Image (tube, rainbow, N blue to C red; front, side):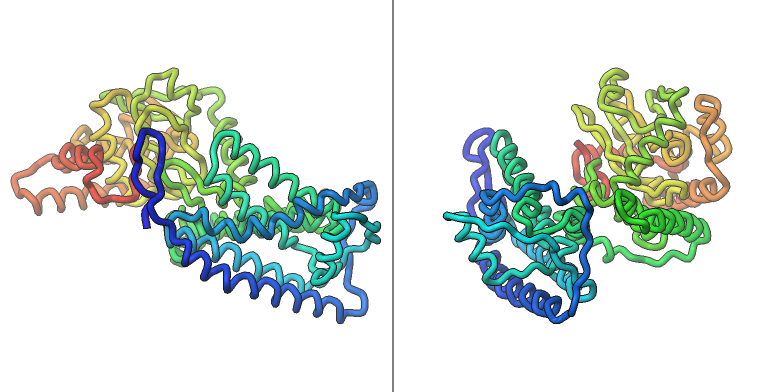
Length: 482
């Protein structure tokens, strides 16, 4: 199914949406929701005294009967959300997010049953009817993580993506009101809200709109460097988790603990796909799930480069620097950007961008080096080109070295590294990265000479490949150009 063609500028006409598939999913998910939710309620009710997690200040939260309306509205939004999906893949990913949230939440309700501990004041009129209807199948159990909040996060993203302008503001306002309503209708304690939000974000990350699911790329790494870095991040996740153990406000430490745990998984085997970076942007799920790590990475990049934040010209209008801001891109007149970071979003603007996500503190692999070199050679004639990573000291420097080497501007890896260091002394291109550069050079030489045995420059095909990239004819989906 397609999103259709445009009958007039700026107006999208959707010819066909897979609504039948959405209805089929809904016919499964609806009964499954009520059956599984009801079973978890019954299970918690069989326990003599289910536990509670409540802060003293929560007794100051007012009971607002009218907020039962936004609380109930999520049921309608749940059903209509499938009509917003434009293709089968989108329907399936949306349904799998909802199903995953249900399965995880129900499992938690069964393993760790909790109950709401406040007495609910009586509600009258139409609002009282709504509360009575809710009490018909709901009980004061099924607390953390709040399934209501988890589903809200998933639906919020779906509706916001389908709207723009004023209508999107309405979506945001109503979603916030639904989030507040779980507290003001006396259905949940506060701890249920952030844990539910975390579950919702996890489901967004697990089933991204684009690309494969993260664990499809799992390849357990036996490389000592990767396993060592994974161990460091796992230790950091453990420390944050321990810090959260006393409870109270320290429970927020579970967010960075989760973030660092997933970064550890990236080094153990998930790779750069854990950040789900495409066309310079991180997916909604990865942005929120990994937000503490992403914020720390950005702050770290600014602390290390605050004395030398300007990019440095290397040769032939190719520059090397840290991840720039949009203002820095405009101020310096860059026409193109080659981004080697996985953990940071790249700035968007009128410039072209090639995004080649690579994990920090690891050598850039030969395939990415060759792709970066090809893009640099193709985009360089269009004007100033910035090659960047978080600091502009390692990953970006390796890409520039590959371009110097493979384009024949440097005869050896040592010469390429020396050229870069003479203009940006802070660069670090270690022995492992130099070995990867030599391997990339040898592979490029082998490919070139298999095409034409008389060729001498290692990257004599770069201009041809580069033009294909600019025109979008390379068939390489890893490099996205804007």
